[in-house]
Image 1 (cartoon, rainbow over the protein chains, first blue to last red):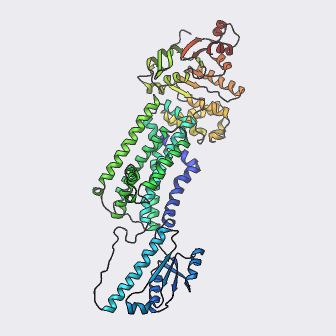
Image 2 (cartoon, rainbow over the protein chains, first blue to last red):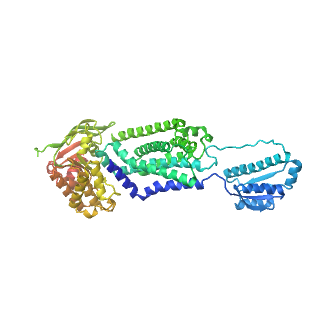
Image 3 (spheres, helix red, strand yellow):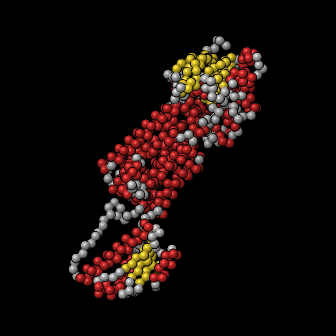
Length: 366
Length: 242
């Protein structure tokens, strides 16, 4: 057995492509998801078109700029400039103050601000709109309070639990963990087993006194180990680069991950038994594992917003449950009592995949 | 020849896949130390029979005894006592020659010392000492083949099964390879070989020829040639197996 595991390590370490996939991808993915694919607004480039240029408009402009969300790049003079500026793509938003803003506000108690947005990126536009409106609203509330002297105001103070700064990294790190463990465990094992089939070495192994279960364990042990190393790398990256905490028990997190790894390996073995060539195994892993993991697990798109049939389908996705579990541990810091159901589902899935593999393997031998 | 004990005994072996009969009542024996050629056109049922003999597949009915053990009852005891080499050699290209020996020695449960001794023995014999630490992929095909045969013999099996071992190799290397086969047969190993090269069939002590799941002839090459009144095994094969 030991000879087997050692040989498998040789295979992995001598094949630089495998090494790159194993250790390069996790790092790149975490950094990519963490830095590039962020939903947070920071330094969005805006312009101001101020027809009034009074104290109030200046004050509001200062508020906007000092919020850190916006970067004032231009002061426009007329509305003719607006469209051309947008076309150049230099700015995402223009805030327009109408003529005699302060006066109108004083006399009529009402003045208009227009926000013009570049909606070619709808999500960003929505967010910019919300942020700008929020800042202006809070300014006007403050004014009302000061001028009327009545301590009447309804102030909303949202408190964001578990992720007070609403960092999107907190959402991505668990997703990336699920994605990578799935990729490494399922795809790499299925490829390495089908490779032995292609090379004809599987035959020699089957003729040897090794039992099929020993062959399988020998093949997957290195991948369990490597997946674990990967997990630790991602957690360390998350912690040191993105301040991603592990609020709950680290041991529980590792154990749950181990369960997920074993589940993914079971799936990988099943794929390798069904497919005849490495390429087939790769395609199957890609389409059967990667895409659903990204799209249907709630990793990026909230499950609640999906059409009902897709929601049902997402129940079948192991990463869905795993992501719930790790979010619970990492962000909420709760114990197994809060996610034993999800854990149980993963256990059942593991048993199902391994059972199916053993059964199929036997049929193949007949 | 009748004094030698039988290492393979096959009685009424039948293997069916659904309604298709791949092996239809095979009966033959192979004595210890014999080089037995197992011939037949593609699809005649050779591979199925070898799978059953090597414990990979179970017979539908009939009795198969290899190295003293019933294959369907003790497949693992059988596996421990046989060696196997296929057309694809079953060696790992990304391991060195020594590592390949190590690995197969390991899975057959040889001790570290035994593996080392055997490896040195075979490398010396094949005059390949300086290639021990080279990756297998850098070694020519003919040498790989000899290595594969050595690896299959490393655990001193009672029988080695060679499934078209000489595919794609030049005639000189093939001849050298057959010298290896003779050497190990002289040491008492039974060699069970399938081949499509009829000149190789001449090297065997006895051959059987399969056609449509049945063994249609089994004898020494000389007897077969005289029986069918032809000069070469090629002609024997063509007159039987078509």
